[in-house]
Image (tube, rainbow, N blue to C red; front, side, top):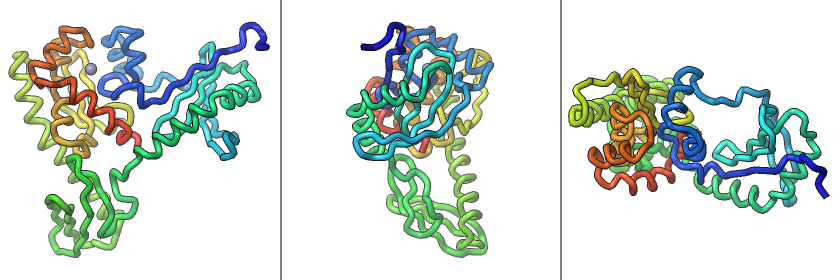
Amino acid sequence: MSPPGRPKGEYRSAKRGGSPICARRRAATKRRPADVLLRLRDIFGGNPDRGESRLRRIVIAGRDVDYRLVRARRRSIGMQIDLSGLTVRAPRWVTIREIEETLTERTAWIVRSLGEWQARRRDVLPREWKTGAPILYLGRELALVVHPARVPAISADLLNLTVLHPASDDEQQVAAFVARWLREEAQRMLTPRVTEFAARITPASPVVKLSNARSEWGSCTHKGVIRLNWRLVHLPPHLALYIVAHEVAHLVELNHSSRFWSVVETLFPGHAAARRALDEWTALLEA
Ligand SMILES: [Zn+2]
């Protein structure tokens, strides 16, 4: 029997939490008005969990499972699984033994969710910046081809991302050169679309910035600043475009009300399918 007041475990796989467009977790968006979330994030710049965190290990179903334990101000034990693995949030007064009991009770869910996330992991950027390494560009997995050349240049076709560079065997230099190019591509592809969409719904012209966030594809502030993640260049172009439409729609509706979604639909007809498809790509943000 559990003693009274024992924390109940609550758990979720981040996969079911939806796509991080404006708010990282859809569940949180449901509980609080989205504009509040947006403003809080503007002020605090992101993750509300600022408790201490430690890496621990537990044996579950005969295998070692590492998890990050975050001591947080909360009343129950929460578990979340995403690309970075298992995170457990618990109040300070809960013992490690109680936490591990709760984890053990959830063995089936933990094993299944970890497996699902591992299967979704894919190479976004090369681990080694050498010819043959996979790189994800506009939703397609291309093979990197690196050649020495006096003048650095990059070009992409259906199969390859070809990099010409004077220091072609210096992986760091090649990586930095490609990273800069990807950001420029994001800017070049997305900024005109923001202007186009915005012109259809508001006389204001938004400020567009690129972000490097790990938690969201895009955001929009009450001052009309739209931030778009440069990693959108990894996505199929129509999904990146949906995110642009989504953020632009926030210029006139800084919430996720039905009015907001009808503005999105005006800008990007059939947005619901794109929203669903985006779930499949969300893990890329943390890859
Ligand atoms: Zn939004």
